[in-house]
Amino acid sequence: MAFGKNMSNNICLITLGCPKNIVEGESLAGILNENNWNLTTDINKADCVLVHTCAFISEAKKESGNVINVLSKLKKSGKLQRLIVSGCMAQEEGENIFNEFPCVDGIIGTGHLDQIQDVITGKRRVVVNSPGGLLESNSPRLLSTNLVTTYIRIAEGCSHRCSYCLIPALRGPYLSRSMESILREAEELADEGIKELVLISQDTTSYGKDLYGSFKLSELLKKLARIKKLKLIRVLYSYPKSVNDEFIRTLKDEDKICKYLDLPLQHVSNRVLRSMGRPGDIRKLLENIKKSIPDLSLRTTFIVGFPGETENEFRELYDFVSEGWFDHLGVFEYSPHPQIRSNCLSNQVSDSVKHKRKQQLMLLQRKIVNKKNKGRIGATMEVLVENHEKKGNYFVGRSYFQAPEVDSKIFVKGDAKTGEFCRIKITGQKGYDLIGEVIDRR
Image (cartoon, rainbow, N blue to C red; front, side):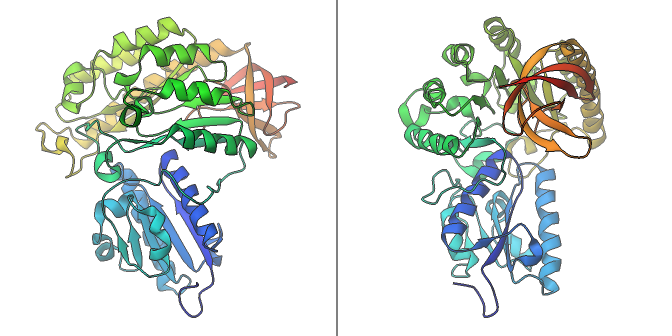
C-alpha cells in the first residue's frame, strides 16, 4: 500500500485552525489508522505529510501557506516524498494550489474527506467538489491529546450568509448531525476518560432545525447530561438569534452544563449589524440572559473596521464593552476577501485604523478582566486540573467560566492530580490568569 518503491507507511498529520478543524483532523487520523498508515508527530520520520488547512480569515490562510512552504523545502531536499493539502484552503483554491505550491502532490477539499486514502496513495490527484465536512466516519476518531477535555461536532456548515463570512462557500449549508450519532460518540468519549465535553459547530444553537424541523439543542443537552461519566458539558459558538428561552432554561437547570455562553456578537451598532447581515437588539438579548442566570460567564468576539464603520459606531461598541458584560472577549480586524459580499461595500477602513481600534478594545477588556479577577480573590471554586508544570511545580486548570484553549487559566499550588477536580481558593492573579491553592480534591 506504500506509494513509491522506497516509501514507508509513516505519515504526519498537521491540523491547523479552530477546534472544529482539530476534531476533523482527529477523524482523518482515524481513517489513516484504519488504512494501515503509521501516524507520527515527527516530520523527520514521515515520508508523507498531510496538512489539514484553515482559510477562514487572511491570517489563517497565511499560516497555512507558511506551513506548506516549509514542507515544500523538505520535499525539495529529498526528506519528504509526498505532500498533501486538505481542508478549507484546498476547497477555496482548488487546483490553483499546484501553481502556488508546485511541490504539493494532491489536494482534497472539505466535501469528500472520506476519500483521503485515494489522494494520499496517488490514485487521485484532486478531489474538490461541493463543500462540506467530515461529520460522520466509519473509522474511530483518534484523539490528539491525553487531556480529559475534548470537543464534539454537532453540525457542519452555515446557512446564515453573513456578508463578511466565507464559511458557506468553504463548508456548505447547515447540516445537523443525528442526535443518536452524537450521543453514541459522547458515550464512547466518556468511556475513554473524557470528563468535559465541548459542543461545537459553526452555529450550535441552530442544531436540529434542518433535520428535525425545530431547534433541538436543549433536548440534546439534557440527554448528554444523563451520561454518568461526563462531568461537564460546555457550549461554544452560539448564534444570537437562536438563543431561545428553552435553551436558557436548560443552561440554568442542568447542573452538568457549564454556566458559560460563547456568543459571537460581532458588533453592537444596529446599522453595522444590518450591513453584516447579523441580528440586532444585542442589549435586550444579554439582559434577558443575565436576568435568568446572573452568574453566567459570557465570551464574545467583535469585528472592528468593518466597511463603513464610523468613529461614532466604534465608540458605541467601545462604550458597550466598558459596561463589563464579558469575562472573555476576542477582537478581529475585518478581513477582506473577493468571494464575500462585504468586499463590494464602499468606505473600506484602513488597516491602521482597524489595528488601532482592536488595540483600544483589547486594552479596555484587559482592565475589565483585571477588575473581575481582583473580585475573585478569596473565592473558592471547583477546578478541572489539566496538566502539571514540572518547572515551578504547579498545576494548570480551569473552572466553569473558562473554556479550553481560548480563555484564561488557573495556576494551582498544592496536592492536585491531573485529570481530576479539586476545590481551590483563589489567592492572586497573573495577567488574565488566576492563582490558587488546593483546599481538597474531589
